[in-house]
Amino acid sequence: MTRAGLSAEEHVMTRPLVHFTPARNWMNDPNGLVFHDGRYHLFFQYNPQGTVHANMSWGHASSTDLVTWTEHPVAIPFDEHEQIFSGSAVVDTGNTAGFAGPGETALVAIYTSVSESTGIQSQALAYSVDDGETWTKYAGNPVLDRESTDFRDPKVFRYAGPAGEYWVMVAVEAVDRQVVLYRSDDLKQWSFLSAYGPAGAVDGIWECPDLFPLAVDGDLEDVRWVLVISLNPGGIAGGSGTQYVVGAFDGVTFTADQPPGSAEDADWLDHGPDCYAGVSFNGLPDDRRTLIAWMSNWEYARDWPDEGWRGAMTIARRLGLATVDGRPQLIAEPVVTAGAAVAPETDGSFALPGAARIDLTGVTGEVVLASEDGPRVVLRWSPDEVVFDRTSATAVPDPFPGVQRMPLPAEGMEALTLIVDRGSIEVFAADGARTLTCLVPWTGQIVLSASPGAEPGSIEVRSLT
Image (cartoon, rainbow, N blue to C red; front, top):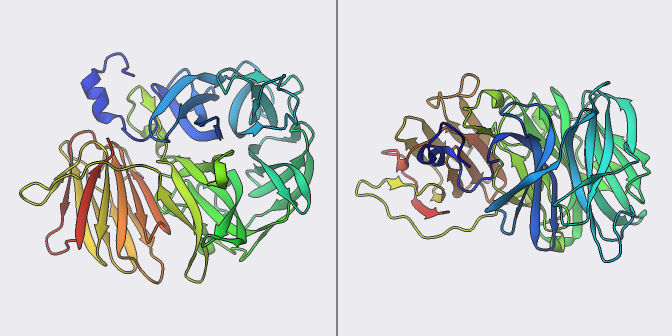
């Protein structure tokens, strides 16, 4: 994982420890998140030839715990005919597509094929019968073509309800700010169901939709559907971001409970600038809903320091729906196991062990995180909001430095959790009802300290490595 010209020690100091990064080259959107035979598969937008956005292919990594990842060879490479844009993957247990032979189970990837000659974006299939190690493109591609240059990012899942049991595809017409839904019995022939939008945040193009059910407050008699839509620009923190809408889905049409009229009315998956294109896993047992997003922003992703690799994923997040401010809202919990507690220094500060979980209590407080090479950020909170200030983190040009504000629910909060790693911080507040993700170009030892006169009620630091 060390690139030429960079010593192993220097390289290790900059690579995150508990967030997935490619060994080399460019990475952006997570794709094809699927769980099969005890392994989580993470595919991703990948340039196998450099550290810029080009030559889009599907990279591949797998994990048994969502923290330690093994990178595999490129799964679906670009060629002279097409680039391989974002999409999803399913376990075709019923062999509906007919790709599996006797004793086999097929993983089927549904991806956006971008024609090198025309720019047309259509939906195509590839399949694997060896648990994702090798892939074959379907000879009948494309399987869905609207003759559009902006029809992309299919999320496919198995639906079973009053309307029957079949595959549902949720994709976007990006420039029209519209989610389009299709159905299929065999993943090859698709028929139109309905469309949603434009609504809510529409300042930028729409991308990477997802649609899934969740029980409100754990009540299986009260299940709602969540439609996730990424957009760029127009995010809550500037640049790219991700909104969501809670509603009902009857197998044909998604209907919002409270249709957002503008960006000001929208609910946001994350209030920071660096959580984009998040999608959830297919195939998890007990319908657990777990999401991973790209931890960057299109405003400055191309300017992030080039270490021979570019791009990191957020920590995996377990999602739920809870009643917040009188209505169902998404809550998120980091999927990571914390280890031994870290003792404070004599001055009360904490030297973080590479990656750490930090639990803070108190209605108000302020802490500073600084690394020995300079970048310094301030996190403060009150009953109304959490404020994250990275104006001194200037290794990346404008608009990277700035102050992010995250409004809190009316009931406020008494605790928050931070996941801190080399290069990033993720904030989980109000029992996960609010999250804020920010890149920070730390490369040396990170030290956490409380601001005099604004100390939290308590600070607990535990190692993640």
